[in-house]
Length: 215
Image 1: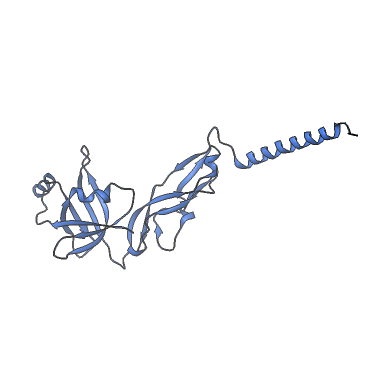
Image 2: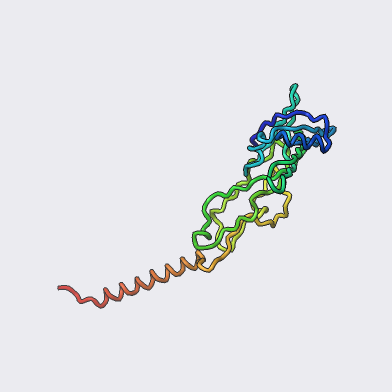
């Protein structure tokens, strides 16, 4: 999984006044959990752009100076209700031997026959929560829809992996094709075409039988 480096500084004071001063200076107060004790730090708001405003999943390397470095994942984020500025971020420290929970984006591949026949593609789960060791965290969950017909669906049970565990029931629908007013079932369409071809063949044979013989 791709990683983003965040350069920050430890916070000496964590009170409301100090937190407000950080935000006024366009710094984001953060907390890193998972170690022996929580680590409070701050970083420039712009340094979170590629982590927060993207559909991709990333791990994070938090560098706090003097060689102090931590691998982590973002666990929670708070935005201002009016300005949408980042107010606070919680991180969770990664350890090689400890599973971690993370939301992973879903990527669809292929063209669904059901959509080409007039059905509607319903993308129900654009992200799925998984639990895995840090080394086994996937960048994306790939879902092949090239055989998805009208009325069909792909659920979590269809994309299970030995590398990670989904924290959803197996019957959770990821994507489906629902029927619409103009939808045509693929089998019905094939049968109709076959019937038309058969009728045309009979007419051609009859015409040959009635044609006058040539000398």
